[in-house]
Length: 93
Image (cartoon, rainbow, N blue to C red; front, side):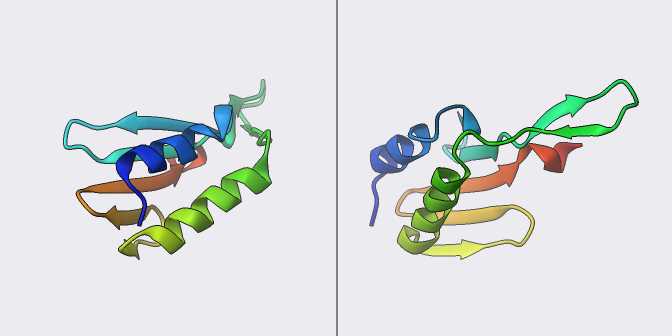
């Protein structure tokens, strides 16, 4: 099982592809930065990930190492003493 420090190191290894925020309740909120904004016609502009394979690998590690995982839209990974919420910037559009 991974410690909180190991999870944070893993998440930081994705660079600009992931935004990581530790909430006041201790939950680690992760947002995949897949949305760039809108063009002149207000069409959504997707952001290409710098390393999509790394992002996928990180999610697979969380899935494998967590005590439990739940959720369809947002994924919630439960670890010993903390949780990780995994989502995408495009969810907020």
